[in-house]
Length: 399
Ligand SMILES: Nc1ncnc2c1ncn2[C@@H]1O[C@H](COP(=O)(O)OP(=O)(O)OP(=O)(O)O)[C@@H](O)[C@H]1O
Ligand SMILES: [Mg+2]
Image (tube, rainbow, N blue to C red):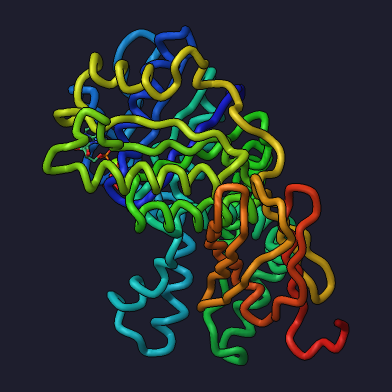
């Protein structure tokens, strides 16, 4: 199997993931890359955007461009059917109604994993130069990309361990009180783990896979993008570009919308500070919906300019997270900060850091990873152009 580039687009609902994915794939094909775009959007946005009916089979959109709209629920049923039967049988053995048992067996994130498995299946069968993935609108969407790093060897070892005793454990069923998994469930489990591990190598390779974050210039969307960005970094993925979409044109200054224009300018400035050094591209709000090849190509050219969308726009660590025994260090690049003078406030799962920059005070909102909930901030210091935040386990005396 070969694929040179996998580009994921993610962002809050309605920000423009589908149209920007479509526009990107179109420009890629225009530049001569054999490109596939995968969407799991139940709203059939790709069909709308391209004006071509796209279904569950790989469909040719035009020369060098193919698209598929997968149904993650059906995929999940196909891949996990056997496992679900087994898990449901456990619940049923506890006297839970069959319908509820299946509801419980359909674990959250499963449809996301199904998308990943589909990507693997496609890569086994076909060769493309680039694959663009239009992700589902969920703040947690990235979590499933991390499943490969979560699973891996441990579960395989476990499954290998229980596989030979599948028959024996049937005998123990009355003793243990839980239905034993049959050989088929275990083999299926092993196969899934293998496939996830295979695809993981691609997803965590920063020369192959990039995550592009689509945001709108409004506070909610920008906050969501910050969180997704940190999650992506924590998960070992490479966010290489931020696209701020639906930017109001300057021409609207002095009109009914001038307040909006001003607040967008301010927000985009903040976005530049927050995400520095990840590059940021903008796309204006068009005067109509983004549909059809011509408009999509125009949008793609506005985003990428003379650049090749297949290039890796940024690599290396924007944010760095170091993690050891009882401590966690977040290293956050900052700009134009001349004085070691800051105010810190921890509110819920965020840390607000006010820094005094050459351009006046600026506040960074840093979403904290879940592991810090049980830690306290021990120290914050500026070293060169980086803010180092050191968290240590609650109750630890060191410090
Ligand atoms: N720059 C733009 N100018 C004009 N219309 C836009 C622009 N970007 C997106 N749209 C329109 O906004 C709507 C939402 O876009 P899109 O479906 O791509 O968002 P999405 O993030 O994929 O949404 P969902 O979260 O529902 O999947 C569409 O009607 C699209 O045509
Ligand atoms: Mg969409």
